[in-house]
Length: 385
Image (cartoon, rainbow, N blue to C red; front, top):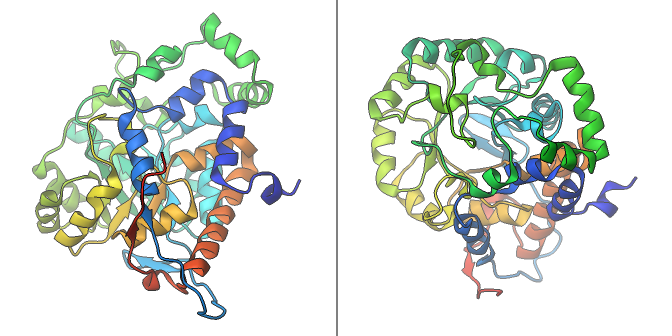
């Protein structure tokens, strides 16, 4: 199959993914919180960012390479952390880690992934990031850091924008709980997705039901959690600046804060010794009253000298260029990599990486930019609706 003819864009992967995975899994992956206005706002705000086309500039040899945190990357994007990826496609974490390693881009493992740091260690490349949901217990906190470091993760990402569990109403309506329970309703949905069901059955026979394996050793015997929450909510806390400073002292590699949405926070974090800020509204999954990530990015860029990573709503190579031209140094994508896995299995991530690169090259040719440093100023476009 010629994948570029059949799946030339992220949207093609998205719609095939929706047809291949059960509805409750799709709702887990695709949903936001509330009425999902923040999720929609992310998309609309990106669509309003454009560039003036360029003509008569001659042939361009495009270079997508960039540097971040003292490392060189062949492209300015990577795979963001997604909790319980193994529910979306069996073995997701290892598949993504291997694809990222082969492409030379970062892969970030979530604290609440369905594989532990130790399990995916053989699949990691040199750009392995570990995303930490902040454990409350100091001993658990230190143990998780030690495990990540020993498994080969070089960069630590602290997520700070989940002080409480979000409601995620669409996910709740789907019937999915954590850990997943196979009710008749969910079994009926699974029966309608034979490819996913076959692969998942094989995985369960080998590894058991998907669960948050990093946290296995810390799970208390009795749990009483709302349906969209999980053991991670029970173990973690809402961090403060003292927590950030403690982590800075304990981690000897690059340290990133994920979930920054206010320019005034950047000065405090810069003084605390953080190495980079990750501008993100959690793709609309936590707070439905937030602005889009892209609209706050320029103000944060103006307020700090630190490198800026960006996510939320990114669905194309053009979106990556929009973010970089708006002040980002690097872009991470979560849902898109999951769409690729659910659509194409093990072939998906490498195909997505190629799609994004080709889209960036095509659009840079249209605007006359041979490198990311040559991107022209952005232009505000009229709404499309």
